[in-house]
Length: 365
Image 1 (tube, rainbow, N blue to C red):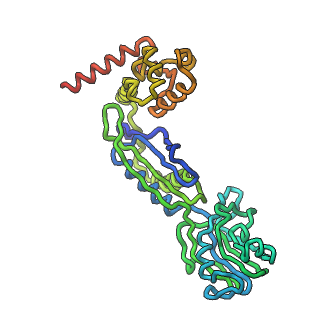
Image 2: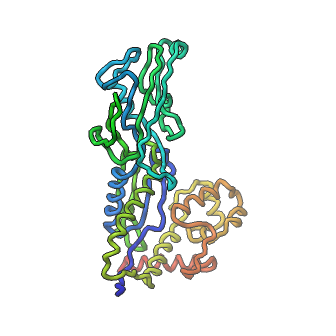
Image 3: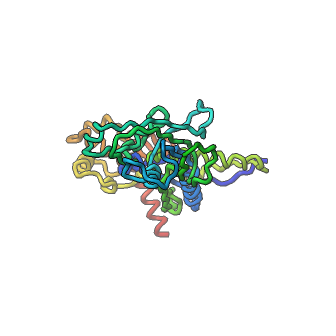
């Protein structure tokens, strides 16, 4: 049996705040949700991003002639304890593809570290070994290649072996399960590439109702994945986990998309079209140009084609770009086809006037 439910407000697109976006941070704005769904979705995505995403990390290190982590190395400033702490700050990136037979396969990366007198002299008595000296770029991308590992003061030639693998979350050294090599030192591994996720829920408007949810997600990563990748992966993980519950459905659901929805959509867009030009904070130049063209409302603006806008006196491409950006923030554009709402260029002023009169009448009642 098919059961019919009333319409759920669903977000149709996601917006990324470009003004604050970096390689490691992004703010995502999604709306509208039914009341309460902002917290439901936001908390689920936050928990998945913090605990379920995969990235590479170092599992162990073996340095020739160093049997354990509590000893000093001749010609090296740091002892093994400090070297291990520095290794934990290494950031490696690799996105496994369908061709990879085992994305969790442990790889042993071997490098013979050759430090000569010339290298030490150029560094004024010391040579700083950084992450790129120990790991090539064949297997992994190095996010922080200049990350300091240890400092050498005497010439040396030592073999260094690193175990690297993909994983999730934080895994202490005693939980790693692989056959340990002689003199190999196993370390704690922080696989999670997401450092911080905050979410906020605000009220947003749909038609005349103002109690719907707007979800804002602030995602900070360490660059082993980008914030956009983190959110994309988390959403797909959530969908995969929900699919199993559809197998026990007693009835199928359909959702109402009738006349009420059309009217609500019409009210929503009319609320935007009725805004005065001075309410969207345009520059003085752009505002004056529109005033000289007798354009008072957003509705009168959006029915104008872009080509005609450029014919206005003192109206240039800079003003056009500014207006298009402001309209995009409202989900509108120049030259919009509003025929499905019974709105066109000839009746736009009348429609807006009638809408405002109806709105005033409903407030008085």
